[in-house]
Length: 162
Length: 162
Image 1 (cartoon, rainbow over the protein chains, first blue to last red):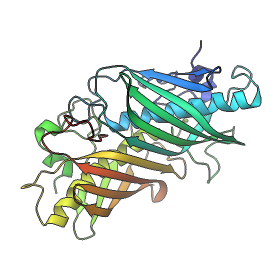
Image 2 (image 1 turned 90 degrees about the vertical axis):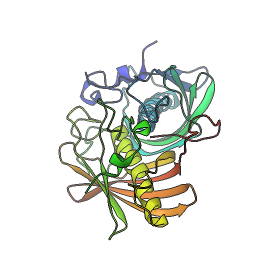
Image 3 (image 1 turned 60 degrees about the vertical axis):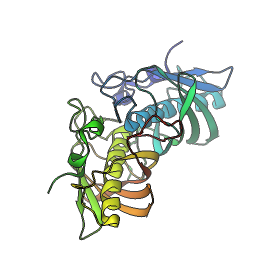
Image 4 (image 1 turned 180 degrees about the horizontal axis):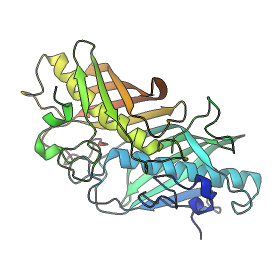
């Protein structure tokens, strides 16, 4: 299986969180599971991704939810339209990101994010995410994503996050 | 003036976003302006902090709002109690973080975050943030912060972000 982010067109593949063309980035990779209608991202933070010693930095957790959600939106939109990402390399950016830190997330183990599209409507997708550290749910996320086109950044009113 | 983060006790100063003991971190610094009841954080993203080329990565913007908000909470709580951070080095962590990306944030210029405590109640503080790139408001944040004590991370129900 190929990560959703690897389908992004090269001109939009420089994201610090998940761009395959960003050599200094986090290279977050998200996979779509059509049979479950869910996405999954696995990531092991580095030792310096600390909050309070022993726990993962909240900004990194927000970054994981962010890139995981933009990728989930692309896959969910492609699935809703009955096209493959190969033929339609969709790219979404974040309009709004909400992260609830339910418990401290231990630094060390691989983290697992599970995403579900809550709404797919026109250019907008809403994604709900649960983040687990060793089977314990520690973070809940909700993101609103907007599909971008060639004119991205030229319009004054285009939203943009990760 | 000394940044709020520089008052954090050394055992809680390893945060990737703002800890002075994290050599690989972002070293975000926030200043409290008692006369305005506001905080201010200035940060210039690195060229690799890209989203779509030309714009700042949303996960970095969320990280800025995160550490800026925890620091603002410490200063606001100290002000509300009439103590100085020198005598009471308060440390907050994030329970919940909401970031609205109103417009793409240009990558290049220094960014300026302005924070205002919306609520200071017991161990909880709510902080509202506006982020500007060259006088243009591009991001709005709201964070709920919780003050931690010595037992942090040992209790199962303690929230924790940045």
